Length: 280
Image (cartoon, rainbow, N blue to C red):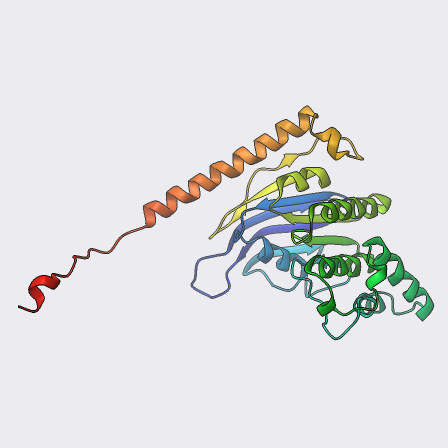
């Protein structure tokens, strides 16, 4: 039995309208790290919300450890792309609130130590008493990463969590997430539009064909030993071949999408007004 399964999942927001997602089938084993790549607006966030329980499928089923997903759970920790921080709470308080919910039996001292550990991990110890309005966008995203990881979820779901960060911070957090994942091999799902990020972090990459009626494409296995070194990967033949294959596939479906859009475009049959003779 797979750790996470999506079986023939379809999603429509309004009955009678075209489907956002169509016939999604996905199986992730325990301890596996999977990345889904796709274009902006292809339905990636809708897919995340089905997995984390914020949405229910119109048809089909989402199973976590063999049981249907019904609502959210701290077993599935989500790192959103839009921070989702409470503006009246400090960095420490935002992380502490989530940790208290996940570990209600731990003492205040234990919870405070956990919060401090994960805030330090994302290099925000100096800002632990600041509120979100006092932080940059990248710093807010780091708080969101710390909050999700501090709950020690059984599965980490990441919805383009590092897109707002500068290159150095993004690279450091990629490594931190991989270090945490590597310690106990928690199951991980990364949603990204960055092919290089997916190859560096995941065991396999699955493209999401753009919607409407978005569906998953063929999987690409990442046959590169861990731990991975970014500088060495540039000279790795498996990396080059895998990257080229994924980008070529994405370009093909992108061109296919443009062709379909052009075929569907119908210009109205209009004639220009004769302004010269109109007032004669």
